[in-house]
Amino acid sequence: MTNTPTIFNACGEPGRLQNRLIHGDCIAVMPFLPTASMDFILTDPPYLVKYQSRDGRGIMNDDNDRWLLPAFQEMYRVLKNNSFCISFYGWHKVDRFMRTWKRVGFRPVGHFTFIKNYSSSEAFTQFSHENAYLLIKGKPERPATAPRDVMPWKYTGNKLHPTQKPTGPLGILIEAYSAPGDLILDPFSGSASTAVAAKAKGRAFFAIEKDAEYYNIAKNRLFSND
Image 1: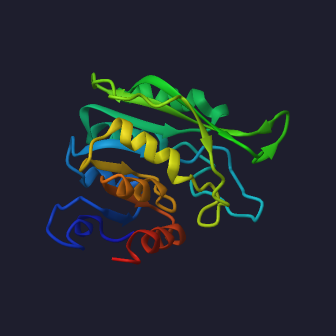
Image 2: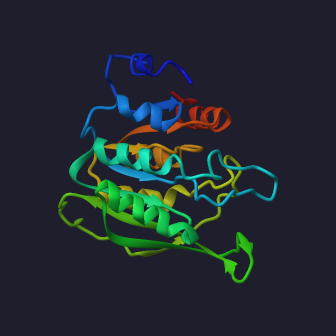
């Protein structure tokens, strides 16, 4: 990973966090972020399921949960008080995620289900949805217009990342739980769908991705037209 203390000086003024994409391990990067510097977190961490796509692509650190507690401890620290965090998760590992969220201080206040019109895989059931929890730090005000907790899911084709999320529903969540100009954190950026959605909704982003391949895809996606 790039020498972390110099990362934040690499593209402009020292300490400037807006619209940054960092190649590195979020557990190593986030300790350098100021406490209470983020307005909203929207992230899609590994599901702890050793996922492999049909074309053989996998997810880094999806085979262990050693990162789970330190990552969410830092997310809680850098999130402003009275703010929201939304995290996707693996449904059959929900006990590990929920235990960690509560341990670091987050409180679950909502749950989203995203309905697919296709099946991503099949075992005892056909897997045709994604899930995410709405977590809070402190006591944030309710959104002006609360989004529905069931939303449609448009297939991305997973061309850029094996678990690539569509930006449409991410944009709905960003609009509901943040304000224009807010700084949105995604420590598990992947191909940067959260950052793309944040830009489209007039928010700033701070995104971190450990895998060099997906970091380069994200960089091209975010900055190729700058």
